[in-house]
Amino acid sequence: MLDGVNVALGVTGSIAAVKTVELAHELRREGATVRAVMSDAATGIIGPWSLEFATENEVVTGITGKVEHVELCGRDGWADVFLVAPATANTVGKMAAGIDDTPVTTCATTALGAGIPTVVAPAMHEPMYDHPAVPEKLATLEEWGVETVDPRLEEGKAKIATEAAIVTSVARAAGKRPLAGKTVVVTAGGTTEKVDPVRSLTNQASGKTGRAVARACHIRGADVHLIHGDMLGDRPDTHYAETTWVGSVAELQEATFDAVADADAFVSAAAVSDYTLEASSEKIRSGEEELTITLRPTPKLVDAVRERYPDLTLVGFKAETGGDDEALVEQARSLRERINAAFVVANDASVMGKTKTRALVVDAEASSTFEGEKGGLGLVVADRLAAVLA
Image 1 (cartoon, helix red, strand yellow):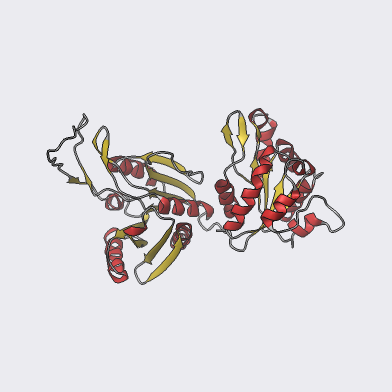
Image 2: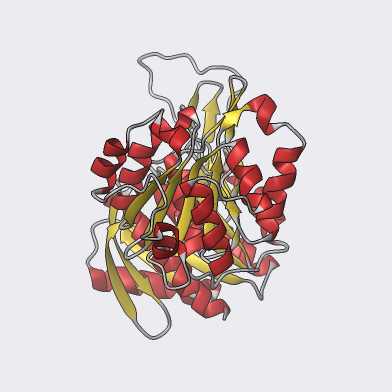
């Protein structure tokens, strides 16, 4: 996601500075090279050696005759993106006012003057975040093109965003945005058809692939609406998209119809149940007798969307079991032709719930193979979609 990207990480005097060691590690896991810049207040919370260890680069704690701010964030500087995390209320105000009296704010002034993409992740007590000047100054920075990673409002604090949310914003700021101005609807996860109040029919879909596609489309600049099958337990983080949670096929279809009405593209990555049933209003008593359940087929979501929106750009997903690549391509081509899809992503169902995948991307003329993390597949789909929409 951040392969080859140089990130200058500005750390200021919030207690959230203790999170920056893990943040630096996460940026590097995604392929970035990181160099840290610290304010004097930040060094009182976390030692520079910690960030030197996390980044494997010398940490800037003062501006000297080496003009570190220009070397890092000037027009011909090292950084591809300047990230301020955490950004205190004091730092946000200084950045918006052009005040540069710390190594971080001096780098910020230089980056903004040089047109270096800049991201801020505010962190402070909630009353400070609610001070009228703070949202006003953040709005000023956003008008100047600065990306803001909204904090988590919990326990009376505006806590710094998650590492995943910050990395996503850095990738969006640092990369090209071929989907800018486009709205993309993505479905993810499985569906749940109730048998009775305590039982249901579902599948093993985790939603990881659909979420990866949604996140990648956001990184490439799109406004994303994610329609996600409900999860047992905690719901995954979907900070990169407007998210609608659904249960049954009927709920998924209704939400999809509403979302795609004003969309530029629809990516159908959810594992939609092929059957439903008439649910019992009371719990079916357990026992030794056999129980027969009558299943009836559900409408095909992609067919229904295509019928209602004949001009919508559509990307399909096809999961099969036990077939070779040739059979997968044949099934994908059949689906592509039936629904007039731009392309279809086909995979063996054995990758459901796993972090890595192997998939075939099939269009009218050719097919290509992807193997690796599902996040990587998401970027492949987003880039292929951008090319189609262009």
